[in-house]
Length: 142
Image 1 (cartoon, rainbow, N blue to C red):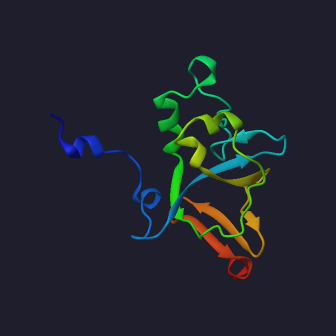
Image 2: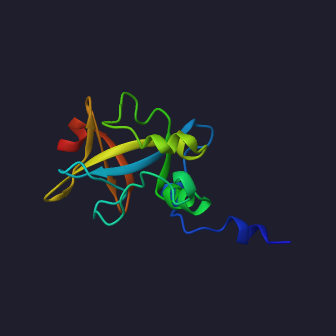
């Protein structure tokens, strides 16, 4: 029988794994969109956003799903209130129980790097030290 610690160990940083107790949460996937319309899982454009899985018929393997889920962040469901994604995740993701529930947050990539995602009077940026920061546009200016 396997040790529970071994089974539950992963390399996910704490800021990616925690939400407040009792808060409804969503699984957020930070995605990046370059000027050519290419979709990425990283701001350095090394990992393309998978359009389909690696299994027969484009189905997602467990490894495919794990790789994508490692890039997600649990967030309070109300954190992105009013945010409507600029584009949807690939239609093939809707066939997978884990992937169809993800909420994309699209960051535009410009020559200087990733820009904040903005909607209404809010914006979000991903900081390597602090994690996901969602600010009002007034807070962002100060």
